[in-house]
Image 1 (spheres, rainbow, N blue to C red):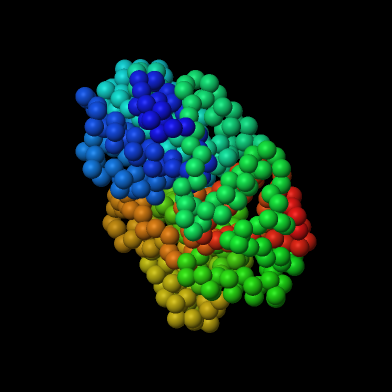
Image 2: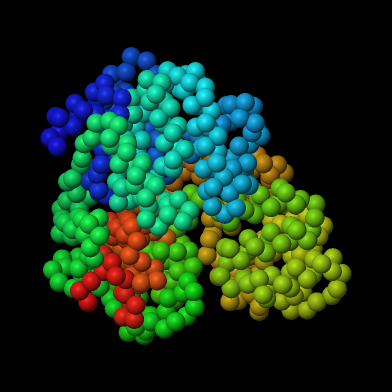
Length: 512
């Protein structure tokens, strides 16, 4: 689509315009450009830009700095929280709606989906509220809309129904936040196609991300997207550009969530990572990320993004069971198992729980004796401060390599840092609010050497990306997995390495 026609359509009076674009084809650039143009033309209100990640929000803020006073950039989740907080009384919600959503989530985002449903129901039943929102924000830009759940989309449609203009940018092939049990992605994809029938449609198709030295990689990734979208396998046996590499690994069964390559392939993987000054290792699951970091990517830091699932669950438990040493100890053990490899429920966790059950009265030696000193902190202060003191003691033992703790490795340092910060505060709720505020606005960026799940790396990019493993167990022939594979491939800007098991490669790749 020619630039003149694209700008005319996006800036028009049409209430809804849907812009579909593959990864790297300029959605963020075009969205920010549109925001700046419209902000300068509005006679009232501000442009509202909604993203799904803090990283994307910060990118928009940087690009819109000239028009910052006329544009508000938020994540869609934070908009929902803000509306729910303002109208918590008619919604029947407590003062801290974020904590309410976290406590209902149980380790996933179901609590925030439920919160979005509450807000969507409210806006649809009280159009005067959505009209007030439109008065403040008459023009809304929704970035990466394929990631929006059903109720978040209802929130946006309520604003459109009250007269707001809505511009939606997205790519159905990057929809990887599926609904429970929906491996076909039928829900999100159907909503996207239905949305296109409700307004004007435009497309972006030039792979700007790879212009220059990575142009051959960009063309290959576009080929891969087209193949996956059409239900075909991606051919990696012939015609590969020099920027795409394949390592075939003869693996042995190491149990669920683990990947151990043969010696030759392991050497190739480590050498490729060592020679790249910047590298991003991607894996489909948290279990594989931890396994790979302990084997072939030891110099890489796990990228945690803005989410703190272990801390959120830990704090929810502390709030619920404060005053009960045994329960606080249980939550403390689960947190340690979540953030540190080698700290196990069957060994360290069982000893710690037994000590608290005995109220720390029985004398112990060695590792149990040192855990007893940590458990005393919780026995004396069965709350967040006691849990933080116990954490500090055990982290010191891990750092010094004490016997019984020398095989433990902390994987999630951001979770630990925020837990220590929360534990040092006298007001747990206020400390968590501050942590969430920092997570909302602060984005440290990927370290030079990072390892991440595909989900957490979404919206990021790196010059040299390695995807491990491309096996049948990790990438089944479903639409959800096709999308997940495409998201992983499109993170690379300069070179891409695929590690494919000899025994059990994915059906989504062919030609070997």
